[in-house]
Length: 177
Image (cartoon, rainbow, N blue to C red; front, side, top):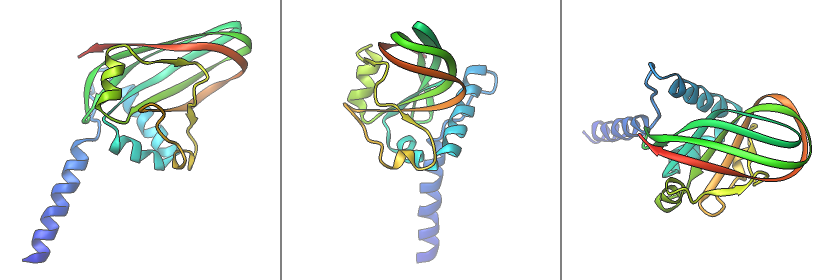
């Protein structure tokens, strides 16, 4: 009886954890792109799972395009996910000036440590330097990553080459679902 109860508890915990995983609406191309980006970053660094599990929510920009020659910029559309469900839509725009040349494409992930950080983002209160401490996804990179002001940022390069030493900033928008 005790083993049966233990097995039932494990099953419930497992189902609860599974229920929190993002399951895309297959008719929405953006949701499918977000799911693909999530799978790719988990493959690049399996340790990032702890951020998905512990965050109050997260924003995923599956395809950010970036380019520049002295003046540069980047833009991407994404989703805000809370408890495994789409909570809203978001955009990221970036402007930079300085020594830069090239272009690249990457996915960006912003994890919100708690409801306060998530609410700040939703109110439009999240802006930071373009060179903010984003952690490039690679095996083990998330092990030493930490939240800064309630936010942790990761990028996963998809292609391109960009050489830069710039000053700039990123701005975000949020629109509830």
